[in-house]
Structures are given as structure tokens and as C-alpha cells.
Amino acid sequence: MKTLFLFLLVGLKPVATDTSKVYVCDSQYAKKYHLTSTCRGLSNCNYRIKKVTVKDAKTTGKTLCKWED
Image 1: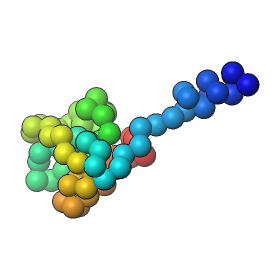
Image 2 (image 1 turned 60 degrees about the vertical axis):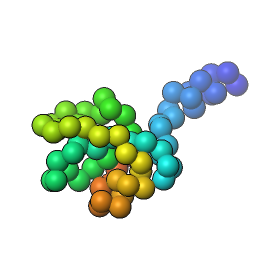
Image 3 (image 1 turned 90 degrees about the horizontal axis):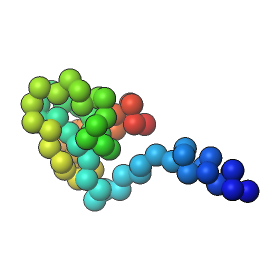
Image 4 (image 1 turned 90 degrees about the vertical axis):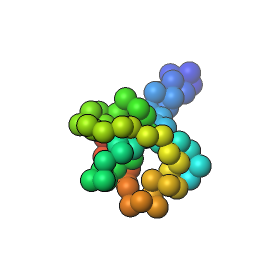
């Protein structure tokens, strides 16, 4: 039972609600939002990285980064 529980805990990914804070590249061409500031999808950002809500990110047309999907 303990082994199964540990396995389930390791496989969990962060879940974002509309009020959760996520990270976006502040470029006009950025198309994704990221659950963590260390996501490798943000490594190409040459602009400022901003922390916004999921709702704000979606309102500007951004979708979840494929590395975190």
C-alpha cells in the first residue's frame, strides 16, 4: 500500500486554476504560459518573465507549455 501511495505522489504534476499564478515571457510573440519559473520552455525568453494568473494568460491567447502538459 505504501509503495502505491509513493508512486502516485511522484507522478503528480502541478495543476493550475484560473487564479493560480503562472509565468509568461513578456514578448509580444510569446504563446505559452508555464507552471514553474524553471520550465525549460522559458529558456528562450529574451525579455522579462512575468508572473500572471492563468486567467490573464488565457485572455491574451496563451496556452499551457507542452513541456508541462
